[in-house]
Image: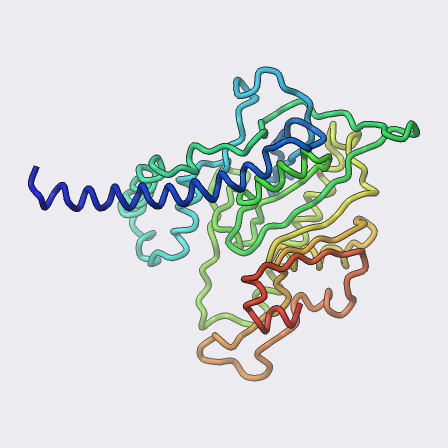
Length: 333
């Protein structure tokens, strides 16, 4: 084989092996933390629901069901419900020129290439530890000998460009600890990819920066909040969840843009929640990057209602080291 063929091929293979090795080391180290002993329930189940005419959402819940795992409708839960190729395409679409998607031929070629490459990526075949579809939900234990106990429930909103799928490992871990977690994929244009009720795809809204106004995100987050409320109301009416979860022990949680959504929902419907959990919350709009620069104030509190009223529930804020590097955003929080 000529040198000019085997040398580049060997370089690509070596790079791929090194990258996969580093990824596997970090990923499996994290997975071991979530898959060991010490959980109250051996498995986490997951089911998929949709609010009629609105958002789809997933329910992660505790389960003692250990029969026929991995077969039939009890398949192991993959990291990405719609497949890694669709996940990659959603994110890649945000960065490719818009002209790429004006040609059906070009669009098909890009998607075909992504599908082929994704087959070589480890997260295509990795599953969430101890998490399976459609398991029988556990019955809440009655530890104190009093009235029957129900599971506390957490409603979760994902961040900008997210889908909720990226948090599956955490959701499954919480389920095995005795919580029910309900997580939606927003359909406001803030997700990298959402599947609508008719089966079509909704991708991230790539707005023109020159057309960006102070009202864009506040309008968008109002839709996000309504979607969370629709999900909560729909979920609490469904069997068996209406009998298994304690609506009086509900928490609202979110990551980044989802944390801002969670804060807004909690002050809009304070009676629906007992606590709020915010990961790396996005509580400021900064227009300094917009060109031409708009007149007037460039940095705004966000969402304004949450700032004006303040959080009305016991609240936990989790801020990563990377989040603290954004000085103005961290200060606003």
